Image (cartoon, rainbow, N blue to C red; front, side, top):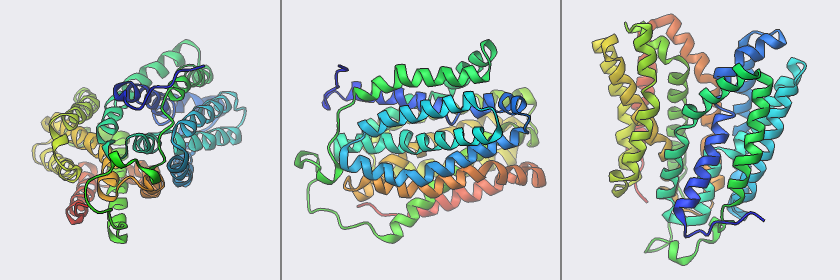
Length: 389
């Protein structure tokens, strides 16, 4: 029998869940960058079709997110996360065995189901079920670990591709889900349903009033805007920096700074900034991308490194805000289902971001950055309109 970690051992819970989420991100969100082209060539497709299937998977994840959150609210997250490992493994096996484009799309649809029940939203809801209003620190902790998903995932996918092939790489990730991630999720505490948070986890004072419709819409916009900008930059950052005047080598080197900047910012949030309300850190983070955009346009290619550091740091903290803001503003009751609904528009916009920003980059060159800068300013305005609970 796999031992279960007691809820009081926060470091063990954070390490287990952070590691399992690293596997989930690395084997889903980050595999198209390495495997899409060989997938397409093997099946006689353009890579655009593979990325289209991946976009479809994100839409599927948006559809199942609220259901998964409600399930975690009622029964805790361990079972849902274990189920996600089984679903991911099934989807990866379907991709590995796909003889036709139809089966490839079916495999990505199953992967979308796994993404809807096994990425950050499910992890955040699981921690809120375990720790209630004290979940901010653990939420930051798992994003600190899973921030290395691309650092681990891309080289490992590339190694398996070079050694065995893309189909065997998918099978390799399926085995990692079953051998590494699933046992780690099985070790997690069952969690307390957030609708019945223990008294010692509640904040002092009267119970909070139901969240206003305006606050929910504002927060949904913040999440959607943040995901759009993050995905647009992930897909087109080298091209954008080269359009601004950076060399190819400089653009690649600057892009490599995004991950360390995200992790460094999350470490700052875990330490110094945890003293502040999540709204404060989120507002500071939302300002980072517009400032980075002004710097890039003002100074051109030489500012590529500054742009990458500012964008990465802001995005790193805003990822944490997706978990901490709903908890701080609305409390733990119904958290899982609420975060599922709040992130559903974000997943859909995330699927469209590479196409939309790619078209803008083709039409306007480096000036396309004003599109994401404007979205960043609207994000800052929405956060300014939100008020503490």
